[in-house]
Amino acid sequence: MMMARTLLPLALVAAIFAAQPAQAQFPFGSRQQPQQEVPGESDLSIRVGRLEAQLRELTGQIEQLQYQNQQLQQQLQTLQGGAAPAQQKSVQRPQQQSAPPPLQQQQMPPPVQQQQLPPQSGDAFDPNQNPNAPGSPRNLGQLPQKQQGPLVLSPNQNQNTDLPPPQQQQQQAPAPVQQQQAVLPPSNSPKDAYDLAYGYVLRRDYALAEQSFRAFLDQHAGDRNAPVATYWLGESLFQQKKYSDAANVFLEIYKQYPQSQRAPDSLLRLGQSLAQLGNKEGACGSLGAVVSKYPKASANLKKSAADEQKRLGC
Image 1 (cartoon, rainbow, N blue to C red):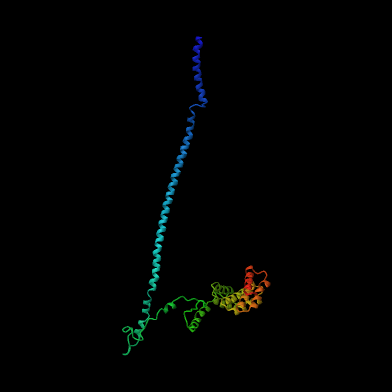
Image 2 (cartoon, rainbow, N blue to C red; image 1 turned 45 degrees about the vertical axis):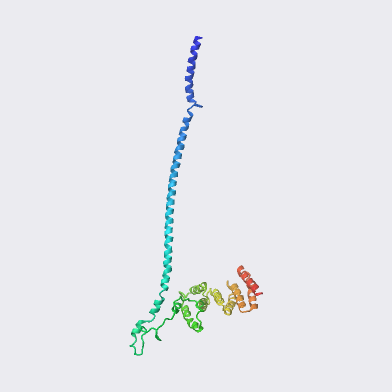
């Protein structure tokens, strides 16, 4: 019994020492588990630090952009603020230029011519000494301002209702016409002549277009653009309300160039010209021929002819 009592504590001590290495090899449930999580926490702290650094960099970039935006706004404000005085200066300059007409009127009497005149006789008077005397030069008003206006080349646009005498208008009209007739194409080629005439149509200067297309047809009657040029000649006459001449030209296109691309348009214009002349029967016949003679014409052209027939009551 004594041996058993002495061996029992020794066995317990040996069991305790033997259990410690086993716990080191199998640390489940032991206090060493938190020590294994320490490396993970350090990684998280490193990542958080990196994110904070990136956040600081982004914040700095945002502040720089805000500063640049403020500078741009200040520059725009300075530019907008400087534009207003410039406009005021530009407004004041025409006023200053419009103010000098009295100076121009004072310069109208030529002093040089007065000095070149022969010596005055005893009964002559000096307009500088007695400006109110009869025969002294006087202000003629603001008529020179109308003469200084821009000259429009088109004879249709030069007509001015402010000038009552019609004889003066007839005398002044040939001057711009002579200048217009002096305009020639850059070369003698049919293409340049046609382009010049068609340019007047685009400008809606139908008087010059009429003259140019007549000259083109006289010089280049056999050119391939002759049918189209004939149509634009009729269109120029139609726009000038020369309906009789326009009707003859459009009828000529239909007779001489029935296969031309402008033949259906010519019939439409022929009907409209005859309607303006009061020839309802001829107008209705021409408008009806647009569809009967040219069934492949465009839908817009057919619709225009139908609308014109309804308007005339064909």
